[in-house]
Image (cartoon, rainbow, N blue to C red; front, side):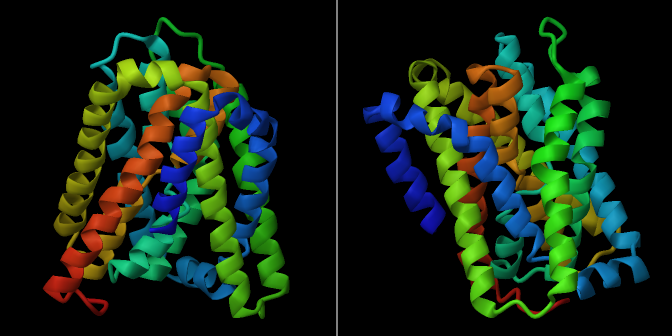
Length: 299
């Protein structure tokens, strides 16, 4: 809930003093790259080794994620006339799992190893997914620099995460306090991204707000429901089902915001910024529900 508090305070600051907040914009991409490096260092070697011994569940989950969300995002993007907003909604659907999804998997008593594996695989494949889906699903009226988007996703996400994983393999004995530091840094990056996007789009948010929130709620709920249905059809145990729901519904919309600001313009970044807040809220609301139902344990 610290992320939500930070976002609430940051949003108020962005609305009251946008010129001051926008001074932080040049630091957005470097901060995000550093954060993804820190996230990579949280991937333990034994988690990767387990995937290579039994990859079927993670690969089927990955296929579900990168099919459900791009197509659902395309469907909900049709509610908007502005090509930048439409493409921004599609971009949300093409993102990998959010940095907070692993924490939410723990809170929702899911399969942490599966969660980390899905997030890592989806992150590495994100440039390829952007290259495949955006030319098909983005608004045809808008020229989308697909290769530039894929290149930036590689530089901002894939390379830092790979470097972090390599460091963790060389230094597997990082102290427990390090995980808390890396998680706090990731949360700070999310707050910074939302703060800058809100400051840059203060006028647009008044017009887009209700309709955009409704569409993104629909996208988020669709992702959760379809992921649960697919995991159930595949016969996954409850813990693994909850994990897939979190991984599919919680997109790394922070990355979407950074990419959109660089390549789609400020309007294209609004859907990602809104979705960043939304998916954290909806996943957090599910925590007490799972606790009341006693969804503990792996099965």
